[in-house]
Amino acid sequence: MTDPSFPIERMKTRPQFLAAAKAPSCARGAVVLQARDRADDSPVVRVGFTATKKVGGSVIRNRAKRRMREAARMLIPVLARPGYDYVFIARGGAPTRPWDRLLDDVKSALLSLAADSDTPARAPARAPSPTVRAGA
Image 1: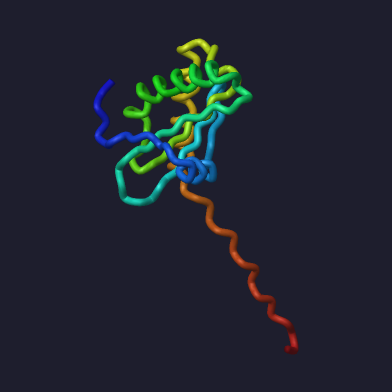
Image 2: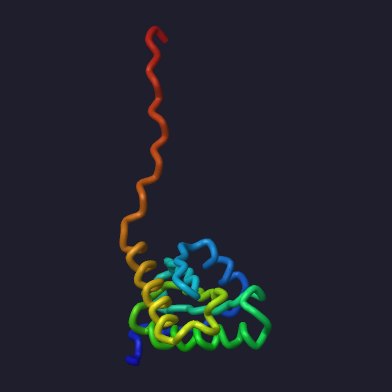
């Protein structure tokens, strides 16, 4: 597709994945997508991929990750937000899902997380107001 206006890097270390695991996530079809705003003023987008043994043996997991990498290569430059970390987690159907449906899953998850990040954060819960006692 087009060259993004921001650099894209791969996530490789466990702490990066653990930080993204605490961020909002969106499950769509054969993919779960986690998106974390790093809030570090860096425009770099980092992307990671994972598949658990529930998906299948190593050959099946690698196929699922290859398919997610290709979907990310096509969609991240268009739909990602600079300064975010994205983790793609394969679910059971990722290795065999029709390509068009897998792309739709990834696209709708990216759009959903982008829409969620556009909404203002909830106002923090206020502390209960102190009660005024009569005669105190």
